[in-house]
Amino acid sequence: MSGRRIPAPRELWRGFWRGDLRVTAFWTLGLMVLGFLSAQFIPRVYRADVRIAPAPAIEDTESGGLAQTLGGLSGVGSLFGSDARFAVDLESTRSYAVVRRLEADSLMMAELFPDRHSGGEPEPSTWDALRELRKRASVTFDQRYGIAEASFRSSQAERAATLLGIWLREADGMLRERKLKEIHERIVQIEEELGRSHLVDVQEALEKHLVSELRQQALVKAAPGVGFTLVERPVPPDLPVFPRPKLFALVAGMLYLAFRFVVLVLLGRGKLAAARS
Image: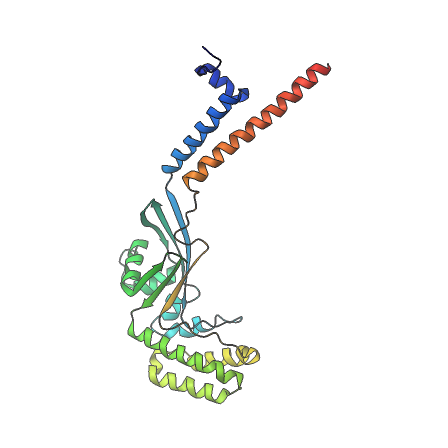
């Protein structure tokens, strides 16, 4: 027999710390395979923080701006305003994904289920909220960029968003020319088209917001269109939190080689110290 014999199990175990090149290669490849296989059994968790905002996007530094202004439009402001934030956890193993948790705040749940909160019925679960949201919104996901767009199906809310979206585009040019009288007339026109019963001090709130803030800056963001936009951050749905199996294997092998290098350095220092003594 030549020197190329298969290492015995005891030799392999002892070689984990300070074996020759064959044993080192065996442990490196073995740990890489182990890391690759273990990653197959770890469920990949997809995390996305979802923020729902009204389509007419407008900057505000004082009172919540348009999100609060829309509070009277059948709950649009409170349901899709700055406070209506929830997180969605998507748990997946390879191609299979399910929604694991939906955290909705109490204000949003109250808007979705007003009868349950007032009639003494059992509190709705997060799954109830998710089903209700799916009924009200048509959601399509863009896997490449991780952006989902939802069109609110309430005709009143769509109409309000349309009117306000058109008005915001018009207001951009009006503000640059300081045509505040035209802005005031447009607000009155929106009030007449929607009806006073569906508005909560819209004229006063918009005037205060626009005159005090935007007149100084002459800046209004263009509304992205009818409906609402869900912006997912920071992880798009196609990027798992846990690394891929190949990365697990590579890390396992590199960690072992780094460990062997440290052991080799320590053993070398020990032998050098013994020789000097």
